[in-house]
Image (tube, rainbow, N blue to C red; front, side, top):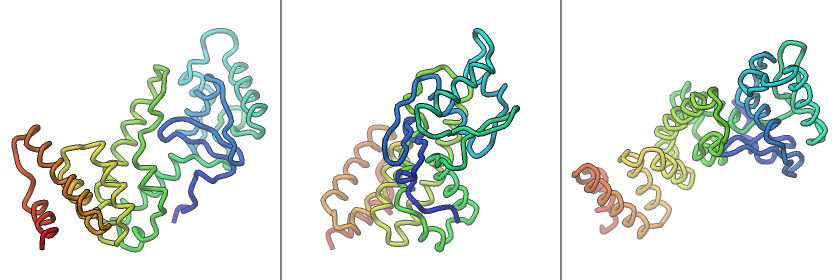
Length: 247
């Protein structure tokens, strides 16, 4: 199984969810815009190494002067600023050092395992608490450059986390992990507000957590939204959940 250690506490962490940051031994390190751009591109590709020419093109380092020299300068700036070398490679390719942890990659590993194993009970029971929170976040949401490589990567991450959240929320609820189920259901509703199954998981998890008034409030919110957006009422299964509150 993938590591269940929370990436937040990794000695050398590259965070991409929801925005870029770099921490070393718990201390956040500031990175200049161009090195951040290169580091983010390589972190998305982690653990795969990328050709230097591909990095130069993707990060638009080929404007003036020797682009390979400019890339070497970026690597040197990162090493001197961070106090460690986040980039390794050879004459042709570079990538993120295996001594670093990338939060996106850690979450992707768990998503892929869950999907491959069909959300088997043993795997769901092993899901770490940090995963539900990671799945709540988009990828590099504050990116300010017009980089062609990022949009398809963001779209793939949104599809992966939506597919995972859809099945994981119900599986966590069935396993009795109500707080994690709540987080997953909330995240799925943020992505897809009209997905009624996510609302049902949210309402049921609130009921099991003893938050009966909040469960009723969320049902009323669902009712208003479905009426306004689609002109329909909540499903019978959603009504049964609320009916159980008054028995």
